[in-house]
Structures are given as structure tokens and as C-alpha cells.
Image 1 (cartoon, one colour):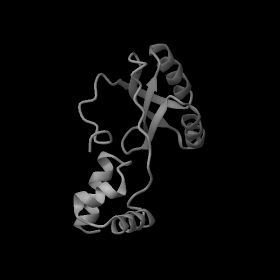
Image 2 (cartoon, helix red, strand yellow):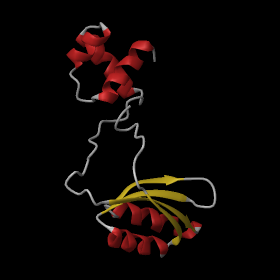
Image 3 (cartoon, rainbow, N blue to C red):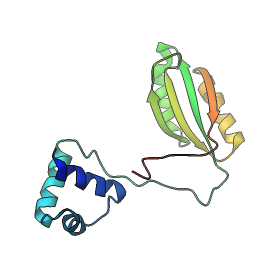
Length: 142
């Protein structure tokens, strides 16, 4: 990966839907050259995919939280199946330390968060931190 690849990636992080022609103009390459580089970066796994980040302005009262979960080894598969089936779960990380997993959730309210926590607590010990504000989110603002 060279400096031009890095510039392409930076532009695409800001706007993944930026036309190849516009990227080409900004880095002084031809459109076919940029397309070729993007394709190569995809093939090499540097670009792992494209996604849509949803904001929920229509639901300002959502409660987001980080839930640390300590599960027994025998309960891990059941735990992973549970978090995959719950639409409130945004992300699940396998972590080091006292807890096995940290789960980021977004619930419609405190009652929904409590309901989800009750399900998680059937599979292990939890520790919950409610997110008050997001001070930095590089996924949204690279």
C-alpha cells in the first residue's frame, strides 16, 4: 500500500459513495487507475466492505450502554447465539480481563435495557455502563 492508496482510503472513509471520478480528480489520477486500486484494495482485504451507519434522530431517548459479561466456557456458544439474535446489540467484543465480552447495546428505553440485561444475566455476570454522550466517534468522522 502506497501513499496514493492511503489517500484513496481517506477519501472513501469520509464518503464511501464518492464517485471514482471525484477521487481521481482529488489525487491526480485517472478514473480507471483509481478503480483498479480500489479493486486491488478490496481483493487484498484492506477494504473489508461498505456499510451504512444509521442515526436515530427520530428516537432521541434511546439508551446506549456498554455491558461487560463474564460467561462460563460452557455458556459461550449460547451467549453468542443470544447476542446475535437481539436487535438491540450493536457490537460484541471478545475481551481480556475479568469479563469475557463487552457488548454495546442501544435500547428504546431503560425498561428494554433492563429486559436485555436480565437475558444476559441468565448466562453470566454483567457490569453495565450507560453511555451519556459520544465525545469522539472515528467511525462517523474519520
